[in-house]
Amino acid sequence: VSIESVDMNYDSEQIDQIDEDVDHAKERELLASLITKLKCEIDESKNRNTLLETSNKVLVEKLKTEIADFKNKNKSLTEANNKLSKENYLLFADFMKSKAELKRHDSIEYTTEMELECAKVRGDLLSYKMEYERSYNKYTQTINDLNQTVSELKDKLSAHQDTISILKQ
Image (cartoon, rainbow, N blue to C red; front, side, top):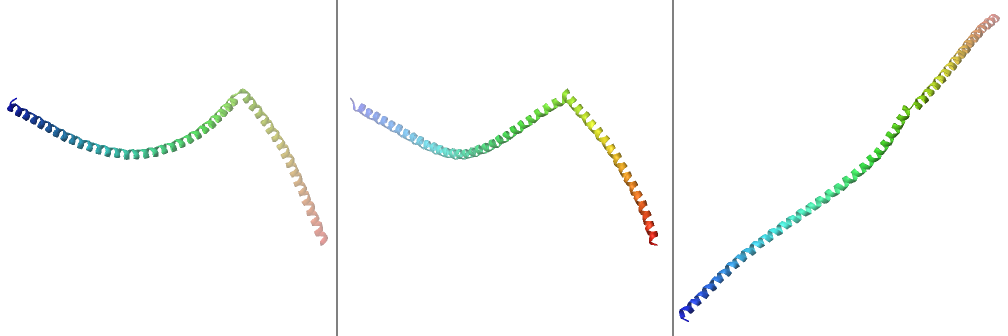
């Protein structure tokens, strides 16, 4: 083994050591840079998460309000629907009654029944009219008789007054 070869070996080992040290330094710088970058990303992620949490809280509150509004509107609509259902039921019942009544009115039996009712009413009207005319004639005769009696009484009264007047003189 020569001195030169030992020197070369030593130089070669030194160079290798220096290269390794340089590589380690570069790796440390790279790792430090990565750590700094990761810290920045972590900070950004924390900030983003904080912002998202705040935003989510606002959205949750808004959603709670919307759900409450929806429940109120749903309750109102359910009440209105129930009311309309009741009205619809009543209207349908009225419709069916009207339909049955119209069917009854259209029947021949109803027509015959109404014709008989009208004939009875006409007969009653004629009876009342004849009774009225008889009563009217009777009352007219009675009034005329009373007027005649009053006239006769006036004549007698006038004659008596004349007699009393003559007797007083």
